[in-house]
Structure formats: C-alpha cells, structure tokens
Length: 325
Image (tube, rainbow, N blue to C red; front, side, top):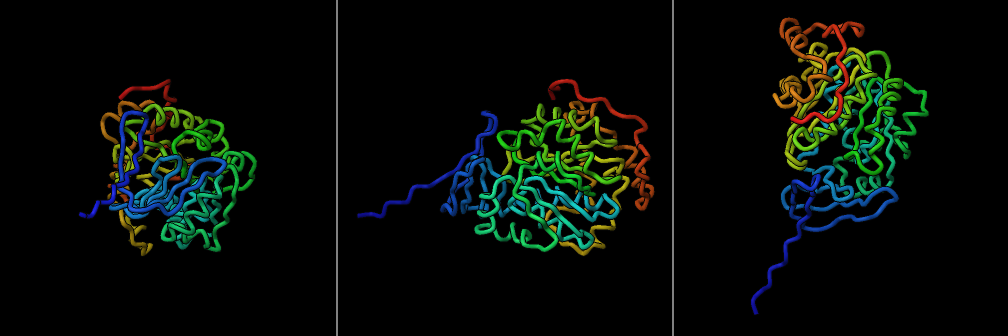
C-alpha cells in the first residue's frame, strides 16, 4: 500500500472582500478566544511563526522587523531627545522591543486591551516579545482609548500599534482619541498611527488623517513594504507638534546609535515620505508639503527647526469625505 500524502493546511486572510492572502501552515501552536477576539499563532512553511487576530495576520517572524522598525525608529530619530514613549496596542511586544533599543529611552508604557495576546506571544514568539520584561517598560492591561482619555501623563512619542479599525480597535481611529493624544504629547511630541493599505483602504486613510488634522501642526504619511499585509505596501501616519520628519531628521543619528537594522536606513527614512502620485492626489488637501523640508535637509543636514516654525507657512484643510484615487 502506497503512502498517502498528508493534506496541506492553508490559512487565508480576505481583505475587504476583494483580495486574499494565503500561507501554508505546518502546525498550530496556539488557538484561543479572548473576550475581544480570536487569537492564533501558527508555524508556517515559509514565514516562520505567525500571529493572527480574528483571522487577520498581525506579524510573521520573517518580516515583522520591517513594521516594528518603521513604526519606532522613524519618530525616535526625528525627535531630538525622546525619553518617554506610550504604545497603544502592540501586545506582541515588537514595537516595544525596537523602542527600548534606544539608549536614551527612560520609560515606556504599553497599554494592551487583550491579555491573551500578551500571554500567547510571551510563550510562542519570544524573539518578538522579550522586551516585555524590560524594567523600563510598564505593561498595563487596559483599554487604550480610556487610558488616553483619563491619564494626565505626558509622552514625547505616542505609537498607535493597532489592528484594522474593526472591533476593539475601531475607537483608535476616532477624532476624540486624536484630540486626547495631542493633549498627552510634550511640546514637540510625535504621534505615529497604523494607517492601513494605500491601495485598498483609501477611505480609512482619508478619514483618519482628517480626524487628526485639527490637532497637529504637521501631518504626513509614510510607506513601507512587507510580505504579509494585503497589497504589500502599508502606511503609517506621522502627526507632530511642529517637527518635520525630513528637516528635523539628522541622517548621521542612526549610524551613531550603533543599532543594527533589518530594514530601516537613513535612505529608507527619506524615501518612505515620497508618496506615489495617486496618494498625493488623494491626500493633497490634508497633508503638509515636504519639498521645502527636503530642500532644507539636503542643503544642511544638521538643521533642526524650532518646534514653533511652520515649514509650509499655512495649515492644510481637512479632507472632505472619501476621495477616490
């Protein structure tokens, strides 16, 4: 009798009912239902261990460094002296890991609503979650929206490491949340927000940026490529109380830090803010311009703008409704 081959097991993520990603699973490491979502960690054939929340891929070992480096190092190398960081979400620990690599960081508060995510990642994704035990980190199991509303603490950088705007993450894209975030930033502070796919989620990006616009002097979008998110290109929002992500970025700081990266470089930092034409067209009415920042940076890389200096000279208006590409 001939051997019968084992059936292949695949997990698929369907995004907005228009596109689908698939990954071959070799075995399941964890599967559970929390009060907030279904949490799964699986071993895959080509992407290492993978975390999924409600069937949506949050990270894989093969490419998680890209997301976590770009959410953390872009603002931390723009801010002249970051000391305190607040992370909303990010219970896997990857964002905290990258933040805590910076020697100047004195305190990180991580607010995660789902204890199951934290416990599962501690056990099955130690390369991602190890920094959750760092003494500089305070892990608070709480609702990030409520924490932002009620706390009176101030932070140099706030990182919103959220899932898609559904379920418990939906309020993290609301205008009241961004109002409270702006209040919780120190002078010159920076807010980074997970901002979805530029191809499939233009409506979400436009609404998110419009909701942030009234509360921040500077507003930008930057991009990164990865393997496990729909479309392969993903975005972060950069909202700041004056700092420009190009003019206030000193390219020698990453190398001087001694940090070894998988994806982030000074050149990637600059290029990430160069938006394709369809995004410029869609978001021109809400984002601040960068050409003057880029020119200043090329002429004088050491130049640091005062927090009160507005590069554009005027505020952009909010996006009105959904703008098609």
